[in-house]
Image (cartoon, rainbow, N blue to C red):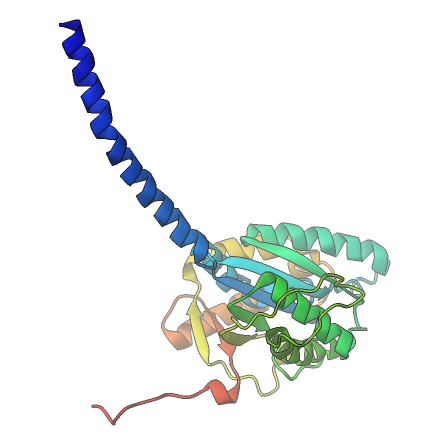
Length: 277
Ligand SMILES: [Zn+2]
């Protein structure tokens, strides 16, 4: 009898083995598929720490919840804006604030090597940003609109636009004093979106409206961790302005809260095969 039980157990185990192997293969294939699929990534490039978070952080928080990787590149810390602190001291504070805020929004932070007010519109900056693009491999890039009252913002637009092209060309070298390791070309950027910013208003027209109703609270709590957004440094009411803007863009687009972007004119094409009713 004992022998019989053993043989039944043996046969049962034998039958289970191929089934387990099959399961393992299917799981492996599933994992493999996910591993081969590049994670959708958004790179938000701002002139100063805080620029991208205040203007479009709600969209980034929403996309993070949807599974996107979110990376902030702060070309400068924006360390010059506090009359009560030295640039060094305030820069350290801004770095700490950026790391906390970006993490609360579901993202990660990269800090550029440049000084507030002195962002150079030059080849080195283009190659530095191209190197970051090659490293991060974004599918979407968000940055400043082309016109701005702040030269650092306008320079960030110019640097980023050219860097996307440089990053895509295999013949271009992107090694700089700030990016010593060469990276291979990245041609995966599908869209460049321009964030709405009170300093970059000239000629900006909201074109794409994104519903941020579900991410609004997360965004508001996160960005208030920046002292300048909380209203203790600048007389400009940052938080109230962007909260009100989310209401205005929401009203225009039929959402409770929305964030708007502009895109390049040449992207504003609607293709119809024929006139339809
Ligand atoms: Zn700024």
